Length: 213
Ligand SMILES: Cc1cc2nc3c(=O)[nH]c(=O)nc-3n(C[C@H](O)[C@H](O)[C@H](O)COP(=O)(O)O)c2cc1C
Image 1 (tube, protein in one colour):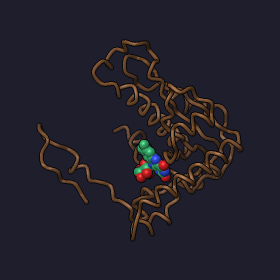
Image 2 (cartoon, protein in one colour; image 1 turned 180 degrees about the horizontal axis):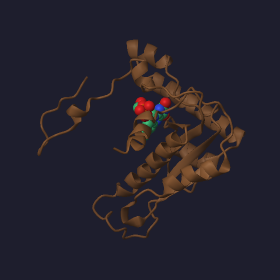
Image 3 (cartoon, rainbow, N blue to C red; image 1 turned 90 degrees about the horizontal axis):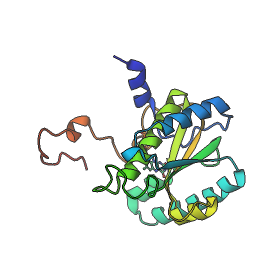
Image 4 (cartoon, helix red, strand yellow; image 1 turned 90 degrees about the vertical axis):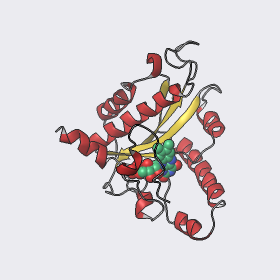
């Protein structure tokens, strides 16, 4: 069994609190980005771009926006959930070494992208595969990645000069970490548990929901 491969998959975590800020060697960053760029894409459209954000002022400005959006979300919670959410860190924008913003260009590949005529989202799926490749490659390099989605797309477009037709899909914090948790942060904080595989696999047809709460 190719155990190292599965080991990386299961070792990968979303990291928020363990970034050290130590430098990333240029060749390591190149390998991680090359892994992202090797992802499959609908019609070979490769509709992604990667903006490597090192500028501390840009990151501070983004972090301020994330802090605001965190408050917006917190305002929608009550009781236990509100108290639990207060304990959960949702980003490592300032502490990580750098960030990679991954974008989606719906016009890449021209008007007739092979395989996208019936499912417009197939372009977006392709970008998510690039992100997953990046995440796993980083885990293999013993780097942490934290996906931040507490932002408004228009804010990020303005901040980084991203053209209007291009969608920012993810802000990824990236860098060396002091350690990696075994259990996802949201599970450790009692926010939500992982669903067992047996509840997700169906035979032949969709069969009744075996959802946990
Ligand atoms: C699309 C997407 C958006 C996410 N956005 C955030 C975020 O804004 N803040 C955060 O702390 N984690 C974010 N996460 C990380 C998830 O919370 C995390 O993947 C999940 O809890 C499972 O933990 P694990 O990745 O360590 O297995 C995001 C993950 C995905 C896939």
